[in-house]
Length: 266
Image 1 (tube, helix red, strand yellow):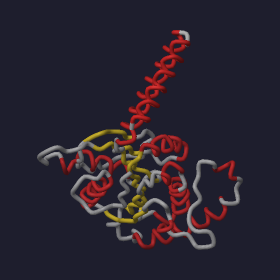
Image 2 (tube, one colour):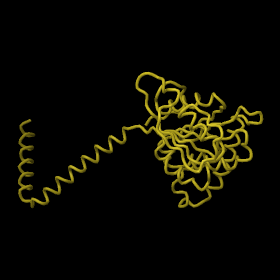
Image 3 (cartoon, rainbow, N blue to C red):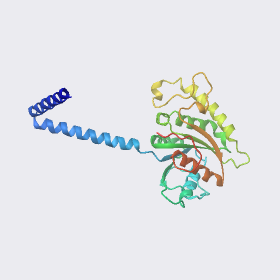
């Protein structure tokens, strides 16, 4: 122990001698660098520990995203809502929890317009997402199947979504209509279309898809269970939509109640 103490005293003496030999300006700069480094590390630690609370509503135009946004916010159906060219972006307590006693956490919902020209808006919000709800029009699915698959493919291959294991809920909307397709049918068709996209896009130079992660298992037909992040398919319509989606949003954010919707807590 005495040897360790003597060695420590020697190191301290050498450090003091070196400091005395340095210009005062250099000492100040070194101290400032150390202070800034400590502050950056503390800030990074705080940001890393804070959980994102953004849920992204995505999908093609006309799928019903905006109506779902208003149902989550204030419980209204907002009949007559037209296709939006501007995103609906708001932070609020879910409608079903407004009467709940105790501490209720607000959630940030972003309804991204589905028009192709506005796709950059989706790229802006995905890195902040805790979960993604991809809305599909179950009644008009066949006519928009290819476009929906391309949109969903872009989400599932986005590096920020895959690396953070952001859960994705494919929500088949308007299933109360007689001509609506079932979630099982929609799931299978989307998997087939995405498999075609995967094969064609894998032939593209990696330099052109630097922000993409390849989907599935090489040599096997694609299915959603192969995704690195959890992908769930569900359906709903009418008054059941609001309660159903609220439980899913709560599950993603780690707030009770509600069944687990592909939760990944980082």
